[in-house]
Image (cartoon, rainbow, N blue to C red):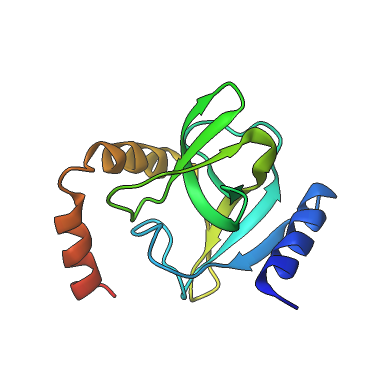
Length: 143
C-alpha cells in the first residue's frame, strides 16, 4: 500500500467514529509534535477551527498534519508549527481529520488542546519572526 492509501484508510476509519493513531514524519510541527518519534490520534473532522491541528489534503497533491491559522469562508490556511514561512491552502472539505492527542515515544498520550498547549501555540505563532533561532537551538540540543 502507498502512504496515501494508508492515510485514506485512516480517514475512512475516523469518519466512522474510530480513533486512529498515525505516525508523523518531518519537522514541520516542531516543537509540539516530533516527526519520526511521535504519532497523532486522529478523529473525525466535525467543525475545524483556527488553532486545530488537522490532517488535510492540500493543494490537490498531498496530505499534511498542520495547524489551521485562518478560515475564510470555505478556504482554510494551514501552517506547520516548525515552518518558518510558507502556508498551505485547502477547502474545509479537504480537512479530513482532527488530531486530538499526540503519542510520545514512551507510548504516553497527551491531549493537544489543554490550556498550556493552546497558550504555547498562540505565543509560538506570534514568534514567527524569531522562532528560527529557537528551532535551531531545539534541533541541536533536544533532537
